Image 1 (tube, rainbow, N blue to C red):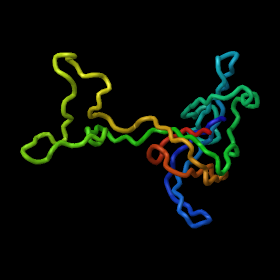
Image 2 (cartoon, one colour; image 1 turned 45 degrees about the vertical axis):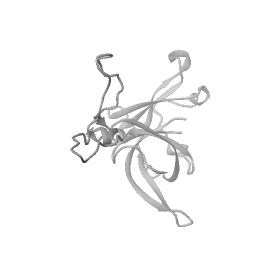
Image 3 (tube, one colour; image 1 turned 180 degrees about the horizontal axis):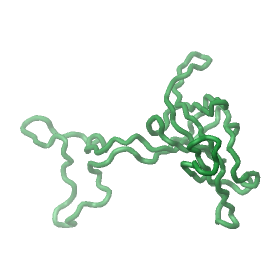
Amino acid sequence: MIGFLGIKLDMTQIFNDQGLAIPITVIKVGECFITQIKKHNTDGYNSVQIGHLKKANIFDKNIKIFREFRLESNNIKSLELGEKIPLSFLQVGDKLNVIGYSIGKGFAGYQKRHNFSRGPMSHGSKNHRLPGSIGAGTTPGRVYPGKKMAGHLGNRKTTIKNLEIVLIDIEKNVIGVKGSVPGKTGNLISIYK
């Protein structure tokens, strides 16, 4: 299926018929147009490139973001270049996969980044939040790649799978999915089935 590009607006809650509160993330699905169609006989695979407009109703100049979604050959025949992707592809109850970048948290230490336990706090110990040994001595004489150490935390590409659509507003181009979506408010996300 063709995907969508959207912007995370906010989290809120709605109440179902039984009175239970359902946490939802509200996503504004942007003005998405097909900007390129790739076919198996020319490109080696079938896909559609989607362009997310910075300003509405202007197709030539203000395309801000591009994403490519792979398709099966029978789905690609009915698509045309420049076609706007309607929100009617989505139905309440559909399951979606959402890709976005998690919130960046800057430089983090061992306990926050990798859930290391801390050292003893009493009896003269000076090893409270230090990592301990990071490798052997003369042999191998280096730190192995991939060693869990302090460093940059967050701001990674994250996929959340099987989020259920509980709200669709076609007039405002807004959908509501049950659960959380990676990133902060205003984050650009990719949505696909």
